[in-house]
Length: 139
Image (cartoon, rainbow, N blue to C red; front, top):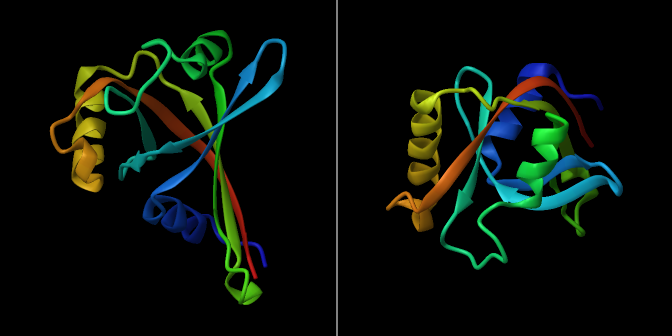
């Protein structure tokens, strides 16, 4: 059954990880697993951290967003034993490159509260994206 917008937003905010899809100029959809935080004003913060090893501090998802600010975040719950518990939420996003240091700092704070690994705020940056719309489904 289709989720209401409020229910979809609630599940999005409560979930702890998802798949961020950006648009690559040649490959099209470029999907990567991410953690995130959602604030009360409909913004999502996605960290670019210094915790996990990376080939570069400038990630492909950032280059994709600079070329095309559209993104999608997909979160889902899977239970192989009980399909009545299946659900997914898809958030349509727009990157906010000029979100400001206050909003980025607020999102960093939410990430630090949510994930123990981020307590010391080991961020190179926090990508700020605005939720434009949500859809969802639950069994």
